[in-house]
Amino acid sequence: MDVWNERSAEGPSATAEEGMAGAAERAGRSAYADPPLTLQTPRVGEPGKYKWLFAAVWLIYLIQPLHNSVHADRSLGWKVLNFAVVGAFAVLYCGLAYAVYPKSGEIGMPVRNTRAVLPVLTVMGIVAFGTSVWVNSDLAGLWIYVGTGAGLGLPLERHQALKGITVVVVVLAFCEVISGANSSDWLLLTLPTFFAGMATTGIRQMAILIGQLREARAQVAHLAANEERLRLARDLHDLTGHSLATITLKAELAQRMLLKARDAAPEGPTPGLDAALTEVAEIEQVSRQTLTDIRHAVSGYRRATLAVEVASAHLALDAAGIKLDASPDVAAATGEFDAHSESALAWCLREAVTNAIRHSAAEHVHVTLVRTADEMVLTVRNDGRGLAATVGGTDSCGGHGLTGLRERLDEVGGRLSVGGNDGDFRLVAAAPVKGFGV
Image (cartoon, rainbow, N blue to C red; front, side):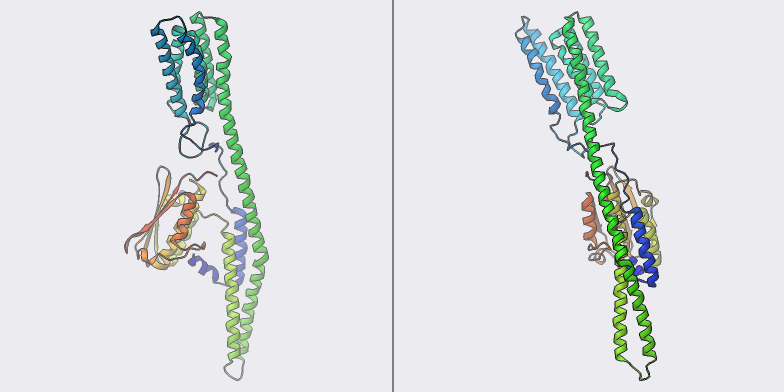
């Protein structure tokens, strides 16, 4: 941004060199200082509408008991009842799988916790209990699906899934006692019921572990990239900073010597010396500007934050005679949502302030930040000239004004809106609270 560029280009070269060193030091200390990646919601795969079918497909094993009931020497009503209870049970089980498997949204946990799990499991247990005790003991295999449902739907925290599977096995044993059926057949169901539930929880835990490994791998790659950026920043400073500072000092010294020579010339005007002074002045200007550009390149490795940009906006606007009215929520939001989204909004704030100083002729600038369900919305208003005065500006990151801001927001899934008449120009930028998946 031009305000900061112009200030950086002023002053003696020694100060510029000190600023260069300070920028490199800050870059080495805080470059891309993102918060650590959280492993609470690992990325284990994309959601899908039909993932629940992976659980529902195992209902195929109920075909054999139903086949046996069709050929049993019982009444038609009894056979119809068998099909009815199995159909109702299948609907409950498929509904449970459909409720817990994520069907849309961001990448996340292998299944999602929902309040519907416990009621559905309770009804499934009642159906399995009544069917296996009073209708058809051959359908006692329904308990295996109840155990699987407990392992699939109950939360893993505080061993709730394990406790639910244990309850299912205990009720299954109680069914054996009161049914008076063949004990060996019922005992054969106990282990499959227990291990089906435990296998389901094990698959969920394995999926979480895979997600954590993916997160860890992404974090390692992220840290490696940061280390390379830091190395480039240090090399850039070490290789060019001192040399450019020396060139600037030499150019200043040459200017003073040429000025003395011109003032001491006895013959009056000296066109040759004047031309030399002009060339040396241009050398100093180019050297100083290059030093400033390198400083910005080095410090650019540090991600922008709203707190820093609000403080910078106060200084810049005060110097321009413009009053800033910034909500305390803007600076307080730093670190409270996705770092990439915050950086994009911080650049929007910086660009809006620069445009207000350069183009708007405003007297007041108002900045607010509002959080919606899934977005942070930054609004910057000024009472100066409208949109026509802003289009075509250039931001400090090399983009072209609003186009550069839109590109930054597009990268994080955000959006930008600008407009307003003279006296009420607004820039509204929205960015997601949670960033895109890696």
